[in-house]
Every structure is written in C-alpha cells, then in structure tokens.
Image: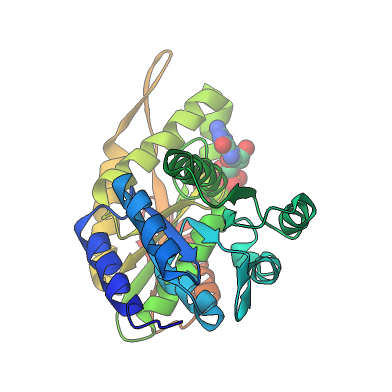
Amino acid sequence: IPSDDQPALALNCVLDLVQTNEQEQYRVLVVEDSRVAVALIQRTLAQHGIDTFAINDPGRLLEALEEYRPDLVLMDMHMPRFNGVEATRVLRQMGAYASLPIVYLSGESDVAMQVEALRLGGDQFLMKPFNPVLLAAVVKTRIERFREVQRSTRLDGLTGLLNHTAAKSRLSALVEESDGRSALTVAMIDIDHFKSINDTYGHPVGDQVIRGLAWLLKGRLRSVDLIGRYGGEEFIIALPEVSLDQAGAVIDRIRSDFAELPHAHPDGALHASFSAGLAAFPLVDSATALTEAADSALMQAKRLGRNRIEK
Ligand code: GH3
Ligand code: MG
Ligand code: MG
C-alpha cells in the first residue's frame, strides 16, 4: 500500500490545528490501510468539523499518538501488516492510553470476533460500510464523555484549579519543556493562620477565602502559567520563562493585593494573608527538587513572620 499521500494529509491536519482553537477541536486518529476508506472517513468527519490524522503503518502508531494527541482512535481490524485488535490490546496496557476511546470500524461481521475485539480493549464496534451520521455522532459523544471525565479528575471542585495530581504532572511537563534552556519559577503559597479563620468564622467562610485567592491568582497569572490547589489552603504556581526575581515581584504584588482583599462573613468582612516560597529552574533541576526548595522557602517565610515571600 503506497503511503505517499500521508504526509500531505498530515500537513493539512497541522494547519487546521494552528488555525482553530485546539481545546474545542475534536481530533481522531484513523488507523486504516485502505486509501479509499481513509478518504471516505476523513471527508465524513471533516463535514462534521472533526479533525483527522490517518496512518496505515503499525510502526507509526505510538509516534502518531504522541505527536497528534488524538481524543479518539478509529481502528480498522484487519490490515495486511497490522492487527487492530492486537494494537488495541497493547495500548490498553500502557498507562497513558488506558482510557483513550477506541472505536473499531471494520467489515468483520462475525459477532464472536467483534465481541473478542471489545473484550481486548475496544469501546465500541461499528460496521463497514458505515452510516456517516452515526459515525460522526459516535465520535463526538465518545470524545465529549471522555473529556468530561478527564476534566472532573483533573480539576479541584472548590476552586476549578488543577488538583494536586494534575498540578504535579503539569509541573513535570513544564520542567521537561524548559529543559534547562529557559527559566521556570515555582512558588508554593500557603494562607496564614487559616485554622483560626475557620475556627472564628466557620468552614464555609474559610472556603470563600480559598476561592478568593484562587480567583485572584487566575486573574493575575497568564494562561501558560500553572496554578494548582496543592492541598487545603496551599497552592502551587509555576511560571515558565520567568526568572526568580521577576516572579518574586509578580507574586509579591499578588500577596499585597490579597492582604487588602475583604472577604465577607455574616458580621462584616475579614482580611487574610498568605506566605510564599520561591525556587527556580535550572538552578534547582527537577520537579521534586523545585517543590522541595519552594516549600522550605515557604517555611522560612512563615518563620520570619508570615504575609511575605522568600526565595
Ligand atoms: P500557618 O500560618 O502556619 O499556615 O497556619 P495555618 O493555621 O494556616 O496552618 P494549618 O496547616 O495548621 O491549618 C490549615 C487548616 O486548613 C487546617 C484545615 O482544617 C483547614 N482546611 C484544609 N482544607 C480546607 C478546606 O477545603 N476548607 C476549609 N475551610 N478549611 C480547610
Ligand atoms: Mg497549610
Ligand atoms: Mg496555612
């Protein structure tokens, strides 16, 4: 099977991605050896605003998954050099693709074979020739459900920020991207005397203070910055391409504004403050070392009286 037309398809996909909002775009990896089928599938999905990337070579599956980052895989079952069911089984054993939606699109009409294909890791089975409207609907609803589950497992319910696990994995990715060539500053932030806010005004007011700080951080930092709720009243921030000194100025400004922010409670308003500790890559050279260094700077800020930042 000639694959000369594949690079052209790939370039189209890349351009589409650049021109549209990557978040909203549905991306489907089509694993299919028949060029006629690929063309039909791609035209059908394109008509429904779905972006596709097609491969016909098993050797490129992992590479395509990593580079194209699809929301769903549309998998043929029988290919000359490639068994779709075996590929699915292998993907399911890899943590990163354990829950990626995989839909078979195959001419296999033997129900026992279809059942076996599902048992080995597929989510759904569609027959060829396919109904275009049904195919587009299956793809969209599977992706929406997958994204919803991902969102709810990544985000903290109280603040909408990344939760502890998601923040840690995002930090690792940022460290890898920066790779010692560009600056990356991490800050650990902890609200001061928070226990006494809870004790004095009650837990719901404490929650409001946490949300207030999350709101301020979201408003002041860039979309490329990592903002996570690391624990109860503790936040983690990472600023790519920002030096320790620059980050210190930004966070100190947020600190002084937060201290002036009134938080409503039934009898009036209260003021809270936070302390922060900063550490920068590449001076400190791993995600773990960065959080540890920022944490010990935070403890120093607490020791020195709170409502301050330390590097
Ligand atoms: P310090 O200035 O040294 O940080 O003192 P602190 O009182 O803030 O520190 P400590 O860690 O002793 O207290 C944190 C408190 O935060 C304890 C816990 O009950 C409370 N907390 C944790 N999660 C939440 C939450 O989601 N909502 C509210 N309202 N309180 C929380
Ligand atoms: Mg704390
Ligand atoms: Mg605290």
